[in-house]
Each structure stands twice: as C-alpha cells, then as structure tokens.
Image 1 (cartoon, one colour):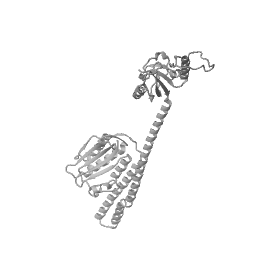
Image 2: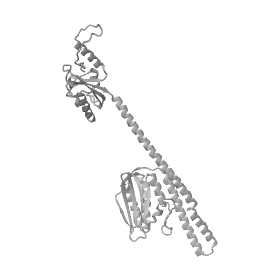
Image 3: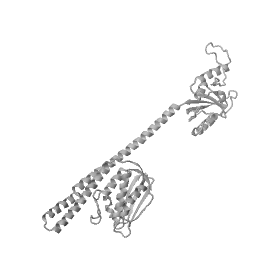
Image 4: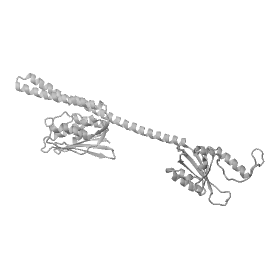
Length: 404
C-alpha cells in the first residue's frame, strides 16, 4: 500500500506544537499537521477535482477501500466507482457540491477487491488558495464512512419485519380458516343431530311398523309386500348410515395436498360413469391444475357427475358439461357441472348441501341425501365454496371454487 496519504494544500502561520519555534515553513507545518490528522481518521477522505478525478486519499481510507497501490488509482475517475441506483444520487450530490454547497448521500460501492460496502458520503467544496476570489471551488473533499454493518443490520431488520408480517398474516388467515371450520362443524353437528332424531328414525319406524304388520298378517301376498318394504327401508337406512360415516371421515382425514390436474381426475370419472349412461352427451372444457388432495377432489367430481347423470336420465337428449372459470381478483377457480335434467326450485338450493336434504321424492330419484353435504365439507376444507343453481325442468348447475 502506498504511504503517500492525503496531502492538502494550505497556508498560514503556526508555531511548533512542542517548542514554539518555527523549524519549517508555515505552509509545510500545516500540511503535515492536516495530513497526519486525516491519515488518523477511520473515514475514507479523498480530494477529487471538478471533473471527479481522484487527487489524493488518506492511508486508512486506502485500507478501507482495499487499495494496494494508490499510484495506480491517482487520477482515476472517482465518479465511475458508483453504479446502479446509487450513481444518480451521487451525481446530484456531486453537482451540488461543485456549485459550492456541501452535500450528502448514502450508497453502495464495492472496494477495489470487489467486497460489498455501503457508505455515508459527504462532499464539500475545497477552494483554491491561489484563487481566493473564485466563485466556484477548484476541488472537492469527499469523506466516506463505512456503514455496511448498519445497512446490513437495517436490511436484516426489514427482512425480519417482513417475515413477521407474513407470518402474522398467515397465522391470521389460519385462525380465520379454523373459525370458519369450527362454525361449519357446529352447523354440521346440529344437522347430524337433527338427522339422527328425524331422518334416520323414519326408516326405523317403517321397519318396525311393517315388521309388526308382517308378523300379524296371514296373507302370504301381504307378508311378501311388507317384507319387501322392510328390505327397501333397511337398504335406505344402511345407505344413510354409510353416508353419515363417510361425511364424518371426510372431516377427520388429513388432506394430502399436492398439485392436482383436474383434467386427469375428470377423465377417470368419465371413464367410470359414462358406460352406465352412454346416451348422455358429455362434454368438458379445459380444466386447471389446483392444489388439493387428489382422492378428495376426485370424489367431488364423481358425486356431482353421478348426480347429473341421474337427474338427466328421463330427458330425450341428456347433456352434461364440465367447465372451469378463473377469477384473477379472488385468485380462485370455479368448476361448474351443468346438466339439462330435472332441475329444482332455486329458492331451496341452499338446502341441498345439508345432510339428508332432498328436493325430489325417493320414488323419482333414488339417493340418501348425503353426497352434496360431503361435497361441501371437502370443498370447505380446501378453502373453497359451493353453490347450486337450477330451474324446474330446465336443468341445474352445481359449482365449487378452489384457490389457485
């Protein structure tokens, strides 16, 4: 490293600090004094001319900037050291200082060895003693203080604050989801309680009543009819109980969330169900890939498509269409399963997703009334919503949403 250090041109008179004598000229003494002070400073102190060319640099500044040979830097374009966003800020400060007013800025400038550094920089005019009447400074003195540790700490603090804010937002959203699930669970428990005390008791009463009649009658024909009703009621009761069990499991099983291509799931469902209703014109639009549990999402599509096939079987031209619609603002996908079947009164559509709620008589369309409740529970656990729309005799559309 060069030992030249910073040398400032100065003038005036001053005695020797120790003896009071004047062994050297006043200018020499002041130059040595200021050079010593500047070389002791931990800041990087430089002098640049009006064009930004480096004229001098103190010793500790050379160390801070990792200058091995100052002679190779002398006369270099100091302005070119600054790049990126900092350069514009530096040029403005340089222009202000060149006009005669001190200026400051903070910016990034690596050392000559490429190590990253942040600096607080002060620029001040340095008038030429040989031109005391000059209106513009001849040189600028530039003092750069290494504030890398401070900037890194600030950036780390900002990153930590951002991380904490993200975590708070995530936890808040998780609490909202938990609250929503708890509210839904309470509603479902009330529905199950009501179903157990009303819907499930109906087939039990049928069983008891017709079993009593079958035991009392002596007519073989009536006995066979009663036994047939008992068997049908038992099958219905078994299906309802099985539906309640599947509904309960859907709320307990852990979701194995992964990217799921709904096109693949729909292809599997269509391959499974379409052979039973080959007369149905089944169409599908391109479906998205969404995060979710593939087994659970497949069950949703299967239930909705199976219902559509069931309620279109009496139509001369049964149709089923599956489509997807993206909402960029809500960042969700809506999947529609549309049919031209029996439809329903839209005033009662909100009831369809409750356990054992049916809008068609069992003699018209078989079922236990648990499938749509299961759909709602699975979709809600995925962070989505369900909706049903229809008109009597004009078909129905069952929809569910999923996050992107």
